Length: 225
Image (tube, rainbow, N blue to C red):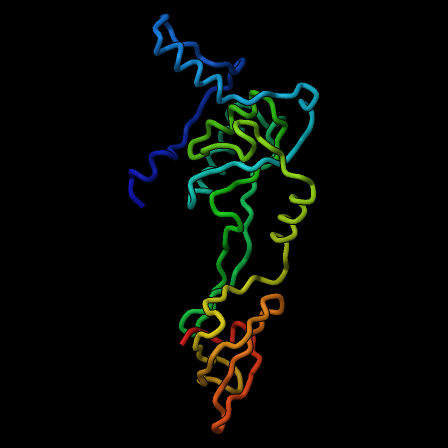
């Protein structure tokens, strides 16, 4: 990865502020007033009644930089004294098994590339810390207003992360030719007729003694021919 790509994510250390506010431009030029107006319009409205409510929010970031963004944000939470407002930063991942050239390897795949979850109390100060983290491009929500995830959405994401069986990455589709790499039909070739994603199974039509014979196999027993 080039240095130019890393620059937007340079780590920064900031002293703990007495109060986070918006900087006013000096002078009275039209350009300065217009710039300040644009800055103010990007800041959402905060509900005082929700000042003690923890919720999960989703932030956008550059795809492929999720880990760097999490590291940067965790550093800002520490150095800016926001542990009582921002509690957890999570990248939803899932273990995935890839089969390549007959070899299996387990990799960690991002469930939602380009997104990071943050458990926080939404105030102007906490919003400022998250929104101005290097690599963060914004909150998910209506316009500039961050929208918290519903409890059922959070539960669904956590269940996917906690699944015991790794997900198997499928590199073939119905109609494609595949090679069987394991079991009694090892090294046979055939055509995929059905894929049973919920059971990690695939049905392959194999030419056996001059007849097309359906064989049901695990995803890990076949690869693209």
